[in-house]
Amino acid sequence: MSDVFFLAEFAAGAPVHSAQELASGAAELARPAGGSAVGLAYGEGATDGAAGLGSWGAARVLVLGEGKAPAITYAAALASAVRDGGVALLAPATPNGRDLAAAAVGLLGVPAFGPARAVRFEDGRLRAEASTLQGAWVTVSEPTDGASAPAVILLLAGTFTPQAGSGEAAVEPVDADGGPLAEAHIVESHAEGKAAVNLEEAQVIVAGGRGVGSEQGFAQLQELAGALGGAVGASRAAADAGWVPYQLQIGQTGKVVKPALYLAAGISGAIQHRVGMQTAENVVAINKDPDAPIGEFADLFVVGDLFAIVPKLTDEIRRRKGA
Amino acid sequence: MKIVVCVKQVPATTAQKHYTSDLRLDRTSAESVINPLDEYAIEQALRLQEAGTVESVAYLSMGPDQAVEALRRALAMGGDEAYLVTDGALAGADAWATARVLAAALDKLAPDVALMGMASDDAKGSLVPGAVAAVRGLPLLSYGSELRLEDSVARIRRLNATGYDIIEAPLPVVASVTDQVGEPRYASLKGIMAAKRKPLETWSLEDVGIDADDLHGAALTRVIEVRPPEAKAPTERIENVPAEEAATRIVDWLSARKLI
Image (cartoon, rainbow over all chains, first blue to last red; front, side, top):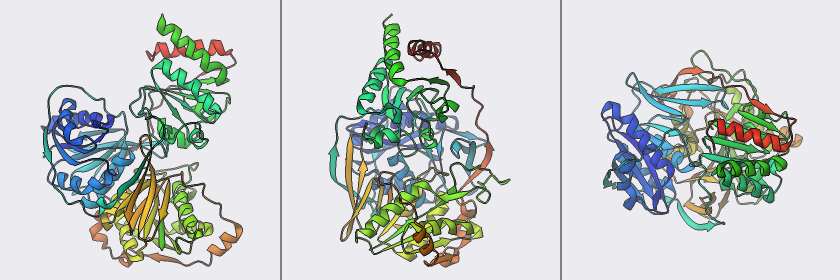
């Protein structure tokens, strides 16, 4: 079987961005060998939304489970769905995606790769490319001889571009006993403020760090992000200081993003932050410290006072967009 | 109640890192430390012990002989005893093999909570906690910003899209925590001295009941190529100009790349 599975998480009735990305990625990967993209849907709205994944490239979708529950509780259904056939299972490199990928590794004894920035078939073998040791090296890996399928690949957001088309996927339920991994359950759910923009989807991110200084400082970044049509992100220092919620944190212990433009204001560029944004296509940094580490890997490094530059930058962008 | 914290020794963030001729990370030449995110798991375990919720805190590592250094450092922070699974057959172990071995050692130690950091600095897959839970057939509570224990259940606080959830599972569990649990303590001089007298046991694969032949050469994955990243264009700098000019030049730069 040359089918390629992908995890398709649903939240609040709709597939999350990674589900669309991975559907298109799986279709692209499966096509040359005559296989299809097979979705593994779970979460709130998975049952009703499963067929719609067809428009992103899925030929079939197996529904692992419906409702609001920790993703790991669908592990037994996942294992049962992929046990017979399929060369690869694409999972988003998000906490939920990693938990399910890990469970597949433990339950099925299959190889796992990533977080990868590319995956392909070469000489009939699956190969995954990853950036390792804080970006110092690129490695290419493959399953060892005799390793069971499917190979699990964690993929960073932005690895594939969703290709919108038409069509409906054939939908099948998966019947599986939940097992011990299904024993974790949500006992309380707390909302704090409005839903944060999904940073993994944003094509433009304006991120602030310690240098932004306050919650009010972030209001200026919000203005700039608005002018650019982007979203606001933050370093761990800014989230720890309480200026923004942790949902906006970018870095090793926050989100990993790959926007077309990453504009960092008042962020020094410590390695822990860098691993969250190093695959951004264009990095612009504004920092008053001419020796800030971010100056070594930004594409454009502006040494100066962000409080003086950011408002003028916002005005100038609005002026040119209006022109 | 008993917690076993899994600890990985990794090359220091600032250390020069190399791959060996067989494309494995050279773990002998670089300065090594406790994986920084594991220190948060240690901190969480020690706080629960100080609060009287947990009686004993032990550490478990899998790695080469010198990983005892990481375990001694963990013991210097606190806790009672440590175990290292080390075996020549484990060189180059991947997430699957690591999970198998840790799961076997944890079965032997039978803690109420097997606690881990949310990711390692070197591999970055965050796969081991979930894979260990799957191999052991126990619930997983992952990415907790806090771990709480009661008579027969464990609860974590975990971020969701707009706030947080409290997720609960019956003990025993496998759990992982984030860097939001609280800053890890430093080892005191007294702690470092005390650590030297704490029990530290070394186990082979056979000791944890795994036949090396079942481990598929310790990996289901292999690295076939290692190369430096593509060279990128040098950074352009704008400095010593008034804010207005800086803003104009940034917009010109963005505009030239069709980013606005």
